[in-house]
Image 1: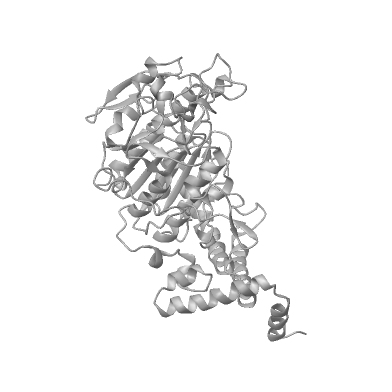
Image 2: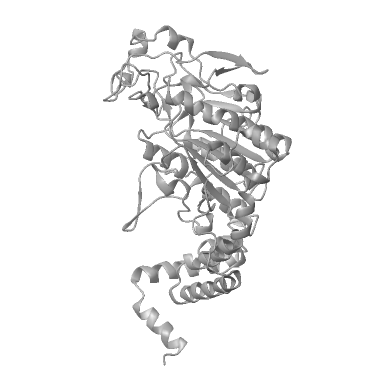
Length: 491
């Protein structure tokens, strides 16, 4: 029979060079960080310290957090700003033409955006004390438009959906090469969760919700933990059945035996960590306990039937069915129970105009109807409950749309559509630390590019981190981002 000491010796002998190199610097760095009092940072390297299962709050929060939680509303595909919030009368005037000659000079709109200018496919009117122009596609949102601040000049350097989504959420459009392995940075949601720490021991700090069809083209990278502990990664919550896959016990199992399984799993991972020094081992210990505790807590948190009839009608929810309305109400229930970051992905906004479902007159109008009432209800509900004071709400897509008619192959002349446009899009923010009723940045008369206060996706990320009380180190390898005009959009 082999002794524990003999087993450890054999494990070390069979350990790979990569495992050895991963373990050694992690141990040395953890000792140095612990000596300086940064136990949370040491825990981030995978060591068995109390903060390992709670995030990296000590190392990541140098200032007071105005935003204690974030709800990020992601419109997958890139919603058209010209049919929502960026009213351009000149675009309507020049619709069907190639635009004024001075505008065409040095414009890349010739290729690949070779189509003619396309005027807005809806009507606009001004709303609220701010006089904000909102299209008739969002009648409910137009009634609460004074509670948000718009950024009209968000730009990115990625053109396709997957790259632009990675750029928005991870800071990188392409893979980084770390040694021989491709790797992406931690997502914005993971950074916020790591910095603020988990509140509830029975719920994850980062939750992801999907509606509308397909998942993000960027895949799990959009909510991945990257170099951070795995408990910072987003947990997908389902709209039907069990809120989390394999969350509930099988029908033939009993709760007490399952409770005995958690300590056994924890002992296994601790022993594996002691032998091999795998930084993920300790994080898995915390996740096993959290998963067990979630069986009761998650079922209660996701039960929309507990809400009053008035609240369900406000959102337009239908319990038991996956919908964006259900997810907006679920987001409010999650943040009030301590979840730090909730990502709502809604697919179907890629309006190229190849079919009725992809057209601005058809599918786009239907998508607006899906989100209009729930988003207005979410802001109203958060405000009257007091949660909006320290909850940041972010809305937007991965890029904007061109002022020209779509020129992609297969476009039908029957349907109006627009192509991807990285140079300018509109996003809005509301809640913690945001001055309501503000419009920041301005594009040219045809909405092609920024002429005043351009804002990169890095700047948007930096603003979210700043409001969460975290350092604003860039998520990408570019120059250090700036928060968005502290004297204007930030209160």
